[in-house]
Image (tube, rainbow, N blue to C red; front, side, top):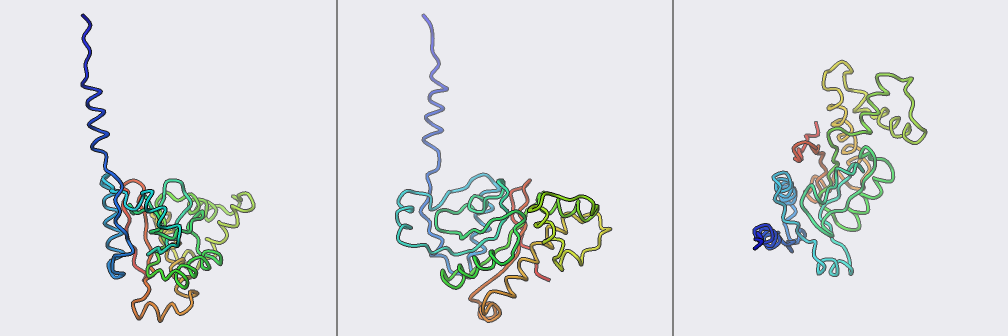
Length: 229
């Protein structure tokens, strides 16, 4: 008589039964002074491979049909490996995300963040770069060899980064120029938002708004806040 093993089948049922369900843990209920801490806690869960996937239920989707109340705006790179909602372990309606190649902050991005701050009342803005950024790598290549020219619109991205005062201030002979160029680009975005968002100084001084920079490490999965010096 042929014997059958039911262990793989039972193991499959056990795995399915233990799979964590998305959690309804609304971020808008968190005090604004604790928002960054909560986002970094979510990133810690992501980096340690035990996310809780909050606010990703069908019920949450239907709730949001009547309006959105995100608590943070994030300017991030469009790199497919850098999705802010996953990196911070957040869900539907939690984050107002603006993405482009190189997480550049120019007119359209400033307008999008202005909408988030002025209309949606977002109290936290993060400009988030990441390691191994292709846009910054293109800038570094072009900086080392100006004869290296990219197709028209990619070259416009490179030229924009090249014109940033924060990039111009970097010594070219430092061994970690690439990493420092990623950071400088983030700080440029922070400076542009602080300069152009209406009443930014007043909002920041009165603790109604916080604008910070961050770097996402694609190897560790961790986000590091960088200081605006």
